[in-house]
Image (cartoon, one colour):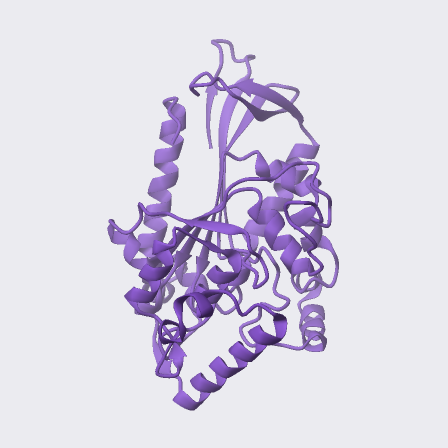
Length: 361
């Protein structure tokens, strides 16, 4: 957050550039808080004189008009945007999810979608309109089944039936922190406040599945999705080949039954999709995906939502991605996430300084 007086008098309006970072549940709380902030404020259009076409952007007035808030960056790290239902580390029947949700209390019932809160937060203009006012939105997610409470599919709101286009960031891969990044994907904004609450319009088609509707609706805001791979920092055990092959057969059968057998497996061939009874994880496979330039949400979920190297890594990425540090032990255990957080911090600071100096980054 950075502010500057628009005049010399202390009674003048203070312009504040506002960025927000939320980790885990903090990302959900932040989305809710932004909606409340908009509700208690007045929206105004501000002409961006630093923009070449002098375009208008939305700001909000607070404290009887003495504060003018400009929304810059909204960022989440390992936040369960789609909730936990159907996104548990081990698949659970709905009856078991209900039991767990009730044990965890009100928050558990929210996360396991035993009410319509998360659905509303992902599809209702009351929540989407404020979030759309940020200049950019960023979501970090742990790949390859390394995050116990928040897998990649819910952290990056990916869905197996969504065709929403994700564009590869071809500029990544040149810095030290990129060693921990398997992909940077972008979705193009197409959101309109007139979007119906259940996402059934010409752009989205008929989203009968709530998670499908939530995924596409959030994607329509336009996001940068950073997919993090911390497996080199996490202990692993090998998966027996019998289990690996059985898992592949179940996956293929499920895709055929659902009529979705037209994604990565078909396009790149079985030899690239599976190797020795396990999901492929070669540089060639990732390069093939990247060469496409863009992939659908369902393909991103397929690519980054499962273990792909014949090993099962301990699912400790949730605290590691944010370099969680409360003691010497936790600092040591989660040190693998420091390059990721250092890069995020640098990006945010550069962005704030760029906005302060009047440049668009």
